[in-house]
Amino acid sequence: MSYGFAIRTCESRIPDANGPHAMAPWKSSPGKRPLALAALAFAVLWPADGLPAGSVHPGPMSRAEAFARAEALTALGRKMFFDPSLSASGRQACSSCHDPGHAFGPASAAPVEMGGPGLDRPGLRAVPSLRYLQAAPAFTEHFYDSEDEGDESVDNGPTGGLTWDGRADRGRDQARIPLLSPFEMANKDEAAVVASLAKASYADAFRKAFGDDVFDHPGDAFDAAVEALGTFEQSSADFYPYSSRYDAFLAGKAQLTARELHGRALFEDEAKGNCASCHLSEPSNNGEPPQFTDYGLIAVVAPRNAAIPANADPAYVDLGLCGPLRTDFKGRADYCGLFKTPTLRNVALRKSFFHNGAFHTLRDAVAFYASRDSDPGRWYPTKANGMIDKYDDLPKAYWKNLNQDPPFGRKPGDKPALTDAEIDDIVAFLQTLTDADQSP
Ligand code: HEC
Ligand code: HEC
Image 1 (tube, helix red, strand yellow):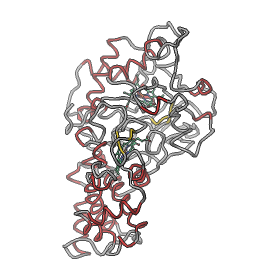
Image 2 (cartoon, helix red, strand yellow):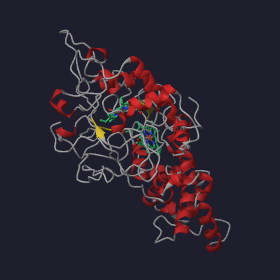
Image 3 (cartoon, rainbow, N blue to C red):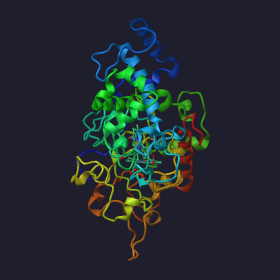
Image 4 (cartoon, rainbow, N blue to C red):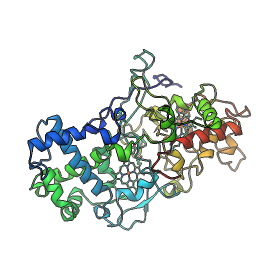
C-alpha cells in the first residue's frame, strides 16, 4: 500500500453510538432492559396517558425522560419505516427495500432496486442490511483503535459512517437521503414529506411527541421525522437481537459442527482466510458480541456489474469514498475504490453481494477472495485483445489502492488462498450468523 496509514489487522473497540438504546445492549436481554425502570420513573413524572407536550428540540432530559422519548420515537419511527405514503409514488416505504424478513436487506436478487415517482428509476448500489449498525462510529479519515493490542498510535485510515461510502454519520442524517433521492422515495422536498406525515394515521402521535404545532414548521417536522427513523434503527429487538447460532455458541449454549468450526478457524487464520482482520468475529475485551465488521473502508474491487443500468456508460464508475455519490473527497485519488466493510451477520440471506451486487451466491463471494489475484480470469472479463480486464470496476490509476492483505496479494498462477473444501467450510460458518427470527 502506498498511502500513509497502516494496514488494518487488529480488533477494534468501537465506541457506542449515541442514544439510550445504544447503551451496553449486550448486557441485558431485550425483556430485561432498563426501559422498565424508565417507564416507572416516567409514570411518576407524567400522567399515565402519554408523553408531556413534546418538542423537536427538547432541553436537557433526565435519564427517564430520555428513555420515554426514545420509546415514543421508536414507535413513530417504526410506523414511518413501513409507510409507503412517505414516497412520491405512494408505493415505496423504507421496508420495500429493507425487508424485515431479510434482516432489513433486500428480498430480491436484483443488484439494485427501483425507485422514483413511477418506481422506474434504478438505484446505483446494492441495498445493505440495516441490522448491526447500532455501534457504527461516525466517519473519520483516521481511526485509532483503542483495543489495538495496546498500540493506539496505529492509524487504521478511513473508517465508519453509514452507507457504502460512509457519507452519513447517523441514522437521522442517512434517512434524509432515501426520502429525497430521485431514484428512491423521491419526495421533491422536505415539505412534501411533512405534508404526507400530517395526513398519516399516526399524525397525532407525532404531534404528541414533537409539539402540537410541529406541522406548522416543516423544517422542524422533517428533522423530527428523521430523528424518529434514526431512533427506531437503534431498537435492539428489531436491529441487533444477537440471536444467531454463533451467538448461542459464544454464550456456551450451542455447538457448532466440525465443519462450521473449521470454517471459523479458516475465517480467523491470518495465513488463510484472514477474514476476521476486517470482519471481526470474536467478542471484544468487554464482552460485546462481534459485529463482523471493523467499519473500515477498503478497496476489494468486485467485478463491474453490467446489470446495473448506470454501468452501461463506461464513463460512470462508482468510486465509493472519492465519489461521485459522496462529494467531499472528490479528487482524492488515494480514496478511490474504497467501500465500507459490511457486517457479515445475516449475509447468508442475501442474494446479491458487494456494493455493486456483482455476485449472486455466497460461495462465489467467498471464492472470489480466494483467487481474485491468482486466477483473475475466473472473475473478470476478457478484452478483445485476449487480455484479462482485471479489476475492471476500478480505473488503473487507482490500482495502488487495491487491498493486498491475505487472502489477496497472490500472483497469477499461484495456488488460491483457499481450497474448494475450505471455501465450503467458510460458507458453512457464515450460515451460522443468521439471526433466529430469519429463515434462510
Ligand atoms: C429504493 C430502495 C431503498 C429505499 C426505499 C430505502 N433505502 Fe436505505 N438504502 C438503500 C441503498 C441502495 C443503500 C446504500 C446506499 C449507498 O451506499 O449510497 C441504503 C442504505 C441505507 C442505510 C445505511 C446502511 C449501511 O450499511 O450503512 C440506512 C440506515 C438506510 N438505508 C435506511 C433507510 C431508511 C430509514 C429508509 C426510509 C426512509 C430507506 N433506507 C429507504 C436502498 C433503499
Ligand atoms: C481487508 C479487509 C477485508 C478482508 C480481509 C475481508 N473482507 Fe470481506 N469485505 C470487505 C469490504 C470492504 C467489503 C465490501 C466491498 C465492496 O462492496 O466493494 C466486503 C464484503 C464482503 C462480503 C459481501 C457482503 C455483502 O453484504 O454484500 C462477503 C460475503 C465477505 N466480504 C466475506 C469475506 C470473507 C469470507 C473473507 C475472508 C476470506 C473476507 N470477507 C475478507 C473487507 C474485507
